[in-house]
Image (cartoon, rainbow, N blue to C red; front, top):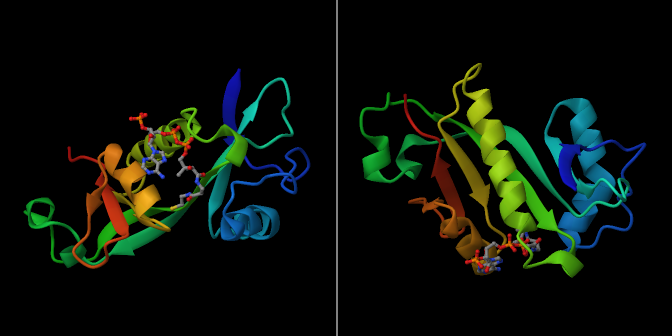
Length: 162
Ligand SMILES: CC(C)(COP(=O)(O)OP(=O)(O)OC[C@H]1O[C@@H](n2cnc3c(N)ncnc32)[C@H](O)[C@@H]1OP(=O)(O)O)[C@@H](O)C(=O)NCCC(=O)NCCS
């Protein structure tokens, strides 16, 4: 059975993780623990209960804000003229051998759920992501992410009003 839990350097083997993207491997191996400890970003990992040290995928969230005019006109309506409170999906990756098996979608769904839960305690209106390339951008669009007005690879997901 798969589960998603907070990165724990004592349990999870970061060295063996390879998603095929050097910068994301490097982040998990060298920076994720430090950022978690320092309160910069939090990383959740996907593991199988049968092999709890093997990281199958991970995502990282951080607090963010975006300028109002980054959002599409329909999403800006009735918002105060301040920067928009946001969460950033700073990293998302699945181990290369498991690509295409739905794990990326499961991680993304968990990240969105976590952001929605946050809204009870902290204003957060959108989840933003800087996609590495057009491939991942297409993946995010499948799940409702919209283009920003500023950058073709920066996307956002409205987290709903009310
Ligand atoms: C992008 C990534 C996280 C997707 O994870 P995954 O587990 O392979 O994706 P899933 O199996 O959950 O795919 C879900 C859907 O997204 C689609 N999809 C996945 N990767 C895609 C891509 N690169 N381009 C277009 N669509 C893609 C799948 O076809 C699937 O669609 P379907 O439900 O209609 O069949 C994974 O490929 C990865 O780790 N890539 C390397 C790191 C990376 O680029 N991360 C993104 C950083 S911005």
